[in-house]
Structure formats: structure tokens, C-alpha cells
Image (cartoon, rainbow, N blue to C red):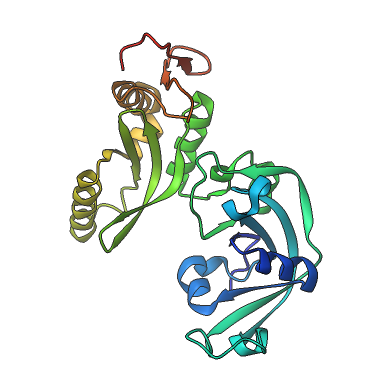
Length: 272
């Protein structure tokens, strides 16, 4: 709680909750969720809402944000005094007291209509974001690779959740191709060098490959010194071998690293 966050993007999946935020100027977050998923970025200075499919034309995007004026701990019955006693009665929440909602001049959409819960981010990232993945903050290695992906127009999902039975994994980058997805991981030398971490990585890789993902791992030296000669060629080769990036259109898109934009559109007659 000592490090104040700048912007927190929270899910908005209930029109009643949106009406409360708009008209009564508060939003609730379970205490456990704040401690487990937001961590050092709590408490936030600003709050933004990612609206789900129930909101129709405003769905799968961030359309509204506001300043957080005050935060207090409350029990559920304080928030909903007329609610019948049930399973949720007695739960503890943070109640975020809000300034009036402001509408973004340009929504921040999710290309793949992805599921999110919370995204802690900065004011600079929020102000310049074109789409949801621009909001994520990762290691310097992840940010370097993300910048290259944007330059090459390689569409990737940052921190994508993959569920394998009871285990959950967050990918550094998920790239969805016509013939299967790719998980691209950046392995910092210090973080991944221990035997314990190597064993966890091995189990993680086996789980993710079992459900159909192809995994590419790059270490610090490769990303810092061999981006053009090794990392990007390996990634683009795998994208093209899997039929190109799937964007929801009829024809997937392959990558040509020799083109300035990095991409070219396949035709209907290209071999899939």
C-alpha cells in the first residue's frame, strides 16, 4: 500500500454497477482481489472501466475514466443495505469514492475481445494507448519486444491468460495464427536462472504445449543484442509456418521482415 498507483483499469460487467459509478460515484473491489491482483500498484489515483459484451456498442473497450477521491473499507451490507442475506453477505470490500465519470475522446478497444480483470498502468500509457495491450507494463525486455511487435505490426496479446485444468498461466505475448497460437516469453537471466525457476518453467511449458501452444523463449542477450538477427526472424518464421496472423478476417496476414511495415497480406490462393 506504500506505492500509489497511477491508473487502474477495472472490469465493468454489470449495468447496475455502471449506474452506481455514474450516478452514485463509487465502485467496489473485494479486498482479496486488490491484494492478490493489484499488489504494489494499490491504491490507484485514477480508475478506468473496461466494459464487457453486455454494454453493446460500448463493449470490449475502455470508454470512461475518473479520479479516485477516497478509499475506505466496508462490509457488503453497508453498500447494499436492502439486499437479502446470502452467500456474499459479510464480505469485505474497498469502496472507491469517485469524481464524475469522464468519457474518453477515443475508446481504447480490445482487438480480440479479451477477458481482463485488472490492469495497473501509468498515466502516460493510458493517455497514449491505441488498444488494450498498450496499457500493460512489463520488464524492459518485454517492453523492448512489444515496441518491435508494434513496428512490425505483429498483433500480440500481452499477459494473456491460459487455463490448464486447475492451473493458470499468464503469457508474456500470445500471437494467434491461422493454424495455432504462439507463446513468446522473455527470460531475464536473473529471474529464470535458478533451478527452482527452471523446473517451474519446464512444467509450465509442458502444460501450455499440451493445450496447443508453440513456445518461443528469448533471453536477455538475445533480445538486447540479437533482436534483428535472431529473435524477429524466429518469431516471423513461426508465424508464417502457422499460416499467418489470424485477425478475424477471411485471409490471415503473413510477415515479411524485409518490408518497412513488416507485413504483407496473403491472398486466397496462398497455401495455408
